[in-house]
Length: 110
Image (tube, rainbow, N blue to C red):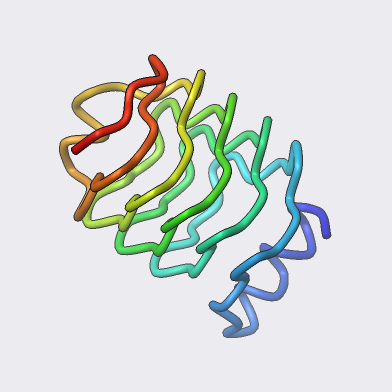
């Protein structure tokens, strides 16, 4: 599935994209508040400026993802892999949970 399909389906009311394969998807600037991307494969995706507030990203593979300027407020990132992701500490501090998340520098959050 590509980014345009996700955005189109989200706009029609679909919110559950759990376990979806979205490698290198282009979702920059999209309003995806409340989306369920739990256990999704997002390696290399462009989520620059994307609204992911209140989203479920639990267990998602987000290695190398561009999250610059993305809204992660109240996002559930438990167990997500953010290794080498472009994201700030300020953005991560707004998340609902980082329990067991692999952080951009490779260490696991407690």
